[in-house]
Length: 78
Image (cartoon, rainbow, N blue to C red; front, top):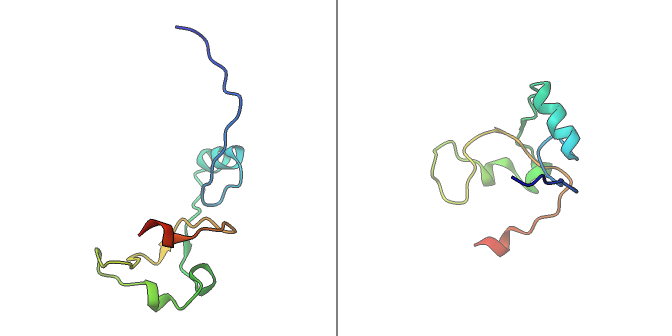
């Protein structure tokens, strides 16, 4: 087997802005989950939340791992 070198790595995980921060969170067993808020959703939580699992276009959990400060356009994925 030939040796390989990892030249670079990128990642985007809740509570971590770098691969090192991600691995530090794992090693520390850090809980990075946070509650749903209007600023995360860009509107009232009730518009997106439904506790019944499987409801189309709804989130069924109040606490999740959110990636903050990231621009994403969900309309490209319908």
